[in-house]
Length: 263
Image 1 (cartoon, helix red, strand yellow):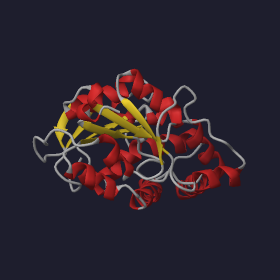
Image 2 (image 1 turned 90 degrees about the vertical axis):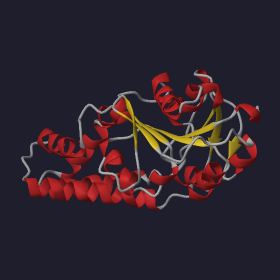
Image 3 (image 1 turned 90 degrees about the horizontal axis):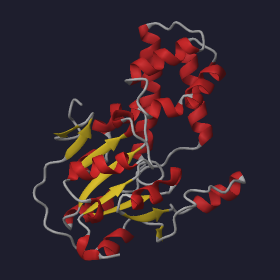
Image 4 (image 1 turned 180 degrees about the vertical axis):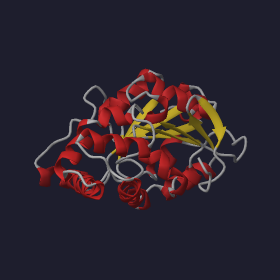
């Protein structure tokens, strides 16, 4: 890796900066939301699973619209109170995953050394809703949420909007992710260098579940199990131009301010 050219580090979100949560946990939360909404919990959980791509591409608008739509899809007509209860449950779960982040020490070290930091996340509207309260929000200079951009990895646009928000060339970026959805080869296709992050204990989870995840078969490169290893890998960048955090929102780069922002 040519250290002299690296000015920015971009990260995946789930299983890179925060745990993704066990599929059984996701299903349990969805079933409980169904009960909150007064619909068949199993049918509601299935609807959540079946609409993953639509939700991540932002085709269902905000969280409120998404929850009400999914309830009606399985034959429900929930009250506003029921919708709010279901939303609160989902957002609390999302926040619990962000609260379990292991990434803050590495993010602080990288920012202290002058790197611009960005997020490229395939995510639904609940991530946008809880982002101001996420412990990650104050440590990233730009975010690209697929549900706002309409673009999922490994599409080039997912990476390009984040690089543009950071005002760096793709050749000046290192992308870090677990490799899901061919995100590592996608990053390299736009000129970034990629590093796979494989959290400690991941092999044990695969062995327990009897499943080996084929994360990114088109990519081969360095793998780390601790994000702090990045500091030594990418060297020392150019000085930071300022401390204001920025985010990519619906086609515009705007100041984020702080995690107390109303956005």
